[in-house]
Image (cartoon, rainbow, N blue to C red; front, top):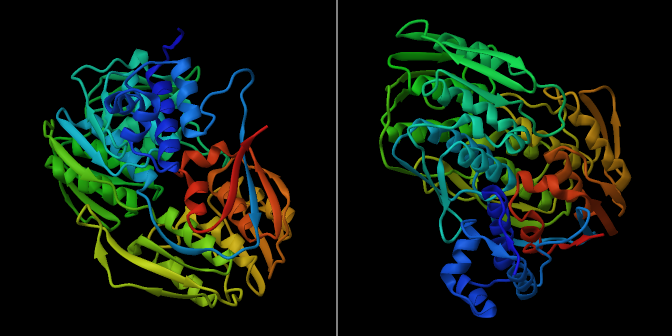
Length: 513
């Protein structure tokens, strides 16, 4: 009998697939174990990625779950077939934040105790960071229900064993700079990757970290980092770019710096706040959370057992609301982090969207303010001014693409200015394949004329996460059958998105050629 003796990250991916398919079928671990004639603990170990499995067992699992978990021969991309043009209905909850989860996983490198992160989205981006952590010696375990992650970091990290493939496939690995400079005198990180959004320099990160003593040179596909003595005990850091990951890198460096660091022009966005809340549990004193100026009193070491619940994702909230808006439906999206959605909702109100909010309540982390949002069928109109993103508290950069498909449903002309990325706007012109009038004025600006009479079509998924989801949502509005090909990138930022949309009444079939 042949065993799949795979690397830990591959076993974790297999476990994630098994768990997702089991949940989609509505089975408990015990029920699946009964179908397989094995124990519940064995199913739990498989889902955690901590047990090798035979090909025969994988075949049995596939049969029990009626899901093709493995295939042989050339790799088969996953596609979605959508039967659109029908309204959605019901209620759906927002999952936890992908961007917060990856920042917290990187920050766990600071702690010599046990960090437990609860309510973690089990998505590809998270799995890649976990694979990198495991490769350098960290012990990372998923809970039996697949929702929580426990991280233990050893005293000595083996950077020579880093999973370079996983690291190159995620831009988040650049957030290792901040925590590692306090632990290692010298190390290398592979070049960071991610979505195809154009050229993105790491220079703002290096400017932020130089006062802490970090010097980085590029060589042969890797960043070579040397950690020198910090410029002084008390530091003033002025960020040249109010970026989220830049701010997080500076915060993590400041957390282990034995002194007081003031960071100006800091991002106060949701993932940055989650990081600060976690560091406070470790004993870091942080003043100014939620503002652009942070005053951080660091500690040279952390050895604490802490638990933190990841906050809800405002970008997923916008995705789900958009599904209701473009299909002219009444749906309720629960657990919306309102602090990070206020500009989006104000813009939608200007576009004549009808919606209502419940009173606020707190997330499980005790800090993030939540509401439930119900959207109603509305006759949308184009806004008076252009739609453009800004650093928080402006309209979220990741939420801008959703306003392109919403504008395509509105009466009139809308100018959308995506000034951050030079390659993202062009991907949104694929909406024309579904009947939209979206014209690329230049690399950063789109002209959108509505309303659109959506029609089904076949589209190849663009190599950028948010535009890919925008096209999927437009297909929900399009009459007839649509096919979205090569949708693997959606799993980078969303956990079982197609299946969750089905809970609202969407008709989506997953298939492979």
